[in-house]
Length: 436
Image 1: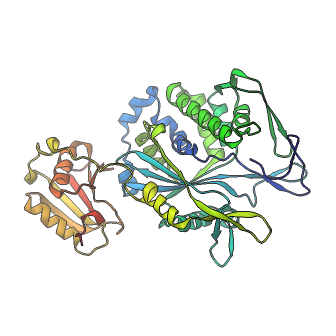
Image 2 (image 1 turned 180 degrees about the vertical axis):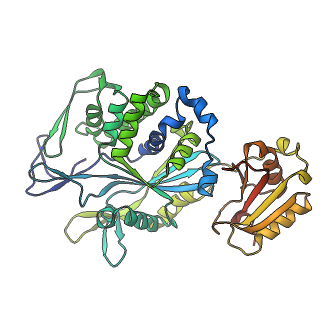
Image 3 (image 1 turned 90 degrees about the vertical axis):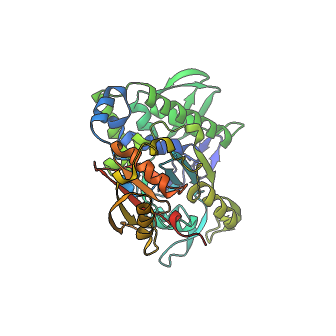
């Protein structure tokens, strides 16, 4: 978990400042991605006592807010640094947890590719090569977004989440701790790293600090494997407690929001967080897709430290499978609902988001021949929509299904529009382009 020398379970204090790394989230943090979004919009969507308030205030769909059916989040877990005089400072922190997360709105699938922090990459602006976690130290979130997107072959990241080392401790304390059955004696001290673990076997209630020690302990026969198992156990326990227990009183709400503000930095807006939390509130944690960027060998840095060399062909296949390609079977249209609609009663606006000039008119003509009334034809806000999106308010869901049925595009999705309107809006995507 921590770099440096170890002797009989204790670290030798190095002569100068040294990073204290956050625990590696790896395959388990996909759940915390959703938990973080839910935490930030927690009081608005998640509990019975406020469900009525939520239904009275319309929560826009993610499709309508982001203008697409899938977004990519960059999730970073940063380390902290300590001086010789034991003072905490954050300058030159590195991102020791790096994950690309795909959130697919129609299927509610969450898919994650974790990037090892030691992956050897080229930094922008002629800065040379370095481990990928150095991008955060060199240029903060913006450079991390650029470097990780280029490494994975993604055009960009739509949003980011940066979790500080205290996020897990604060969250667990805010919900009153968790119950865990410890299977073995755990004793470990790292004074330099501010880590003290002293747990005995048996089922017990853990505070945030104790739980962090429980999930960071690795000094047993299983090593990292046992640590990952404990991390996954704690995540399941925390998420289940957030879902099942009542944390809708003012005291808990204030505490949870405080944890988020102190320990999570993001460029998600409140409406976006609320929408994501509501849309993914019932996500099946066991069904979250996870993978780790593959590597073929290690390379030697100029200072003599080992770094990892990516297996580029394998990475491209992984990105296509877990991030950019289909994450679930194509959505099934509802022909029964569509059959209840008379096309001549449906007014449609068509905008082109496919990148090919004239596609809005082509699709509009197709719908007009089917009997739909075309009100306007124009261009979308972007030209890189992968899939055609059909927007309508909740009262016009049947009309939207009728339009989707008429287009006969298996990948077209129906989304709830942010504004009440009698008009169905069609954003033409690249799936409508003529097949070559």
